[in-house]
Length: 147
Image 1: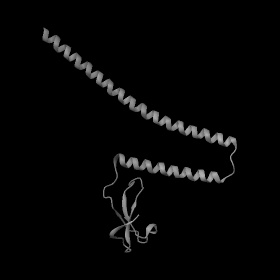
Image 2 (image 1 turned 120 degrees about the vertical axis):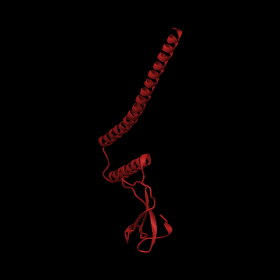
Image 3 (image 1 turned 30 degrees about the vertical axis):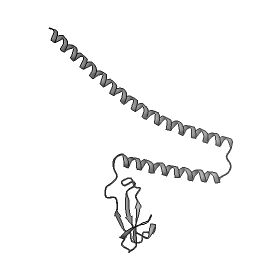
Image 4 (image 1 turned 90 degrees about the horizontal axis):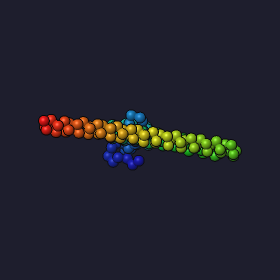
């Protein structure tokens, strides 16, 4: 990352802007020692004064975890590719595991859609109930007015 002009760290080098990926501060930028990742002077100061929060923090943490999982998967695949050739049974097993993963992801999606559907159904039930109460009030008012 390019150094921030005019801002020096404790060792006299231009401070660089970096990005934290901890659970508490995902995506939050900070100034670090200008000696790159060697951190000669351990200089540290937040650039983003406000802490991440809400859905943005959650989205950043989820994205970070997905990236880490994908990097691990790539690493495992690269290591596996270096090993001996796979038998048909191994290939079938991997395809089965892949199918299971796809089905688990689909299951998660369907569960979230079901939850949304339940919420919509509950809202509709409340609407119908309120409509009936209103209707009964109107009928009672009309009947009372006719007496």
